[in-house]
Length: 348
Image: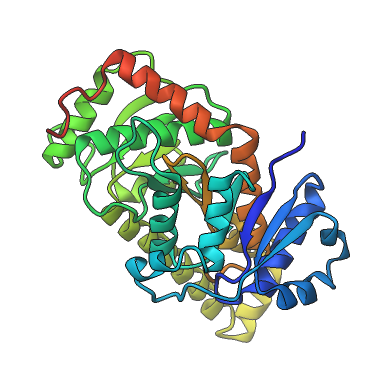
């Protein structure tokens, strides 16, 4: 299968061109059908490509020296959408010059540019930021929204559930992913009016390609008991940062414990296979690639501090979404929502 090429914002992220090009090259070693539009400073990109000769024939360079700063306000970045590497990568999707865009740059600016250029899909009020998180189960869990929308009504949450389920079907292969709403308790009486209204609508829905299993608390997100966790962007971002912080805490705690004495160092050598597996499972680079769902196009956000392997994973996520026509899947599910009149009057 020939994939549409992927536009890479080569200037975004903490290390910029070197890591972005190396990540794209690493992804292509596993999938030689990948083609790229590398957007950024041409001399720097060409130097980076010298160490990855297999990339030259699969890549085109779109020269651009202007970069969106990590602390730049989205409103300021929007004014330079036609001159920055991030803006040009997103506009390449709009123009049909690329099938998707990947950036490790400023999240707020990327969302603003993507929403302005690609617009939201019919039937979607707001796009959502979704990511895959590791679990104790066989599959990762899709969680959204992770920061795009700080306040959401019931209608937004219902749409997030539909989009998250479409994404999960691609990842897990389940025909009806298990969906839950993040709440302060699992009892049906708990939660805000928005959560209660969304839950009632999802419980009564028929014909949707998802299984609504009620509420979930934050400490159960990674247990593997559900496939999609839906929440507003404010709570979702806090939950995500708490999970990432807990993972770093455990890793640092183990490192300190294993280096505290000679006996501990010997114990580390004995248990090293298990600790390496734990490190791999908790490494955010192995789950890198958050997706803006609900747009008329595919845009993936790589973590700003991602290494080459992390960027490669973000590219692989992008390709998977293109292969499985995520936008068309969401559109079909939204048509089913309209048919069953799910959420009629919700959030009003």
